[in-house]
Image 1: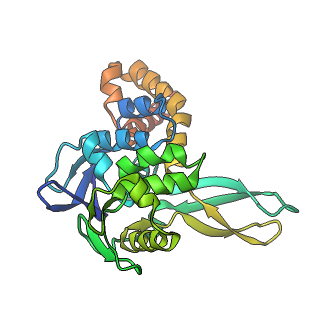
Image 2: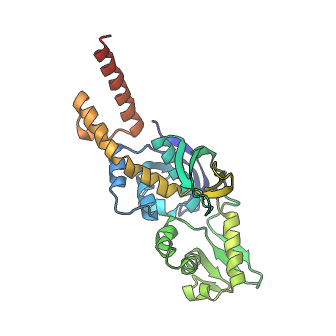
Image 3: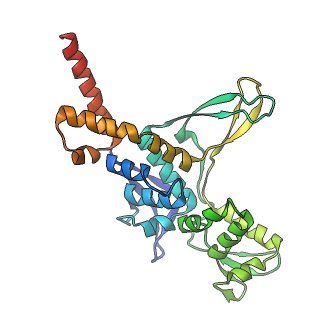
Length: 289
């Protein structure tokens, strides 16, 4: 498959203050799949950074995409690129199952949807930094959360979500009133109302991908919301498919006598096209046609 192109819902601001939105995404090769499947990073934000630095050819005029640049991308932009990468690797259809959450039911519910149907909301405004006036009268400068924030904050979320949010705000806020580069204690001193106002404004300005969708149980007929963890799902697919990857390499090497390096440099769809051709040829020979 050729590279995927498109526009980020947010965009990357370089150090010179130029916004870059158009991107080109290369399909994962067999080597990429192997490295990601064997990564010890689990489904972490750090793994998303590693994936994007390997797969994104460019963002605007910025190329190559280093891990540093991948970390500076907005959270929704990283999700959007991961969504497009999942589509180019495994196709547009997502299949899975969940259990009905109603206690008196609990039946397995099958799910299927097109990944391109996930609603994408573009940024409300585009700027590297924003200024707002709180109800208390203080002015606050801030930026929107990015991948570096994800990597730092994510490990805290399971243990203390409030602490994680405080750390996120401390990283994103650049000025409170007359205080530039405020310390974490300055952010912690904000009132709950002030913090809520900042969080609400960040949410309004940020691009977003809606990963929760409504479904219903075919057994009891009741509706419920399913949260779709794109990151976890995609990396889980890569790990599940790692055994198939080695079988594909063996099959192609056995019949074509290609080296492992040559086969591992191919993206999944190209490997599978060759396998389909081989399967048709073997069937034709076996049938005596």
